[in-house]
Amino acid sequence: SYRGERVEIGALSVRDESSSSPPGTVEAVSDAGVDVASADHLVRITSCRKEGRRVDPESVFERGGRFTRPALKTDDLAISAGGKGAGA
Image (cartoon, rainbow, N blue to C red):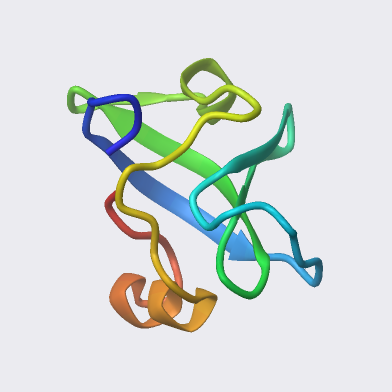
């Protein structure tokens, strides 16, 4: 969840960048998506749903915000998401 609300991640990609922030921290917000720190890479969220409706990730997440249950590694995201996305 993010700030106490359930947000379903629709699509994401693993970036070739790492972060020194704790896993689950929102690093950047742009029109291209939202970059979130994981234990080993940045993950870019490019689509999501909130309350059953598709919303732009940049309208939901803020830089410096934190997921309360982050995935531990990007490998975990790919496995649980079938390579496309995971619920948060």
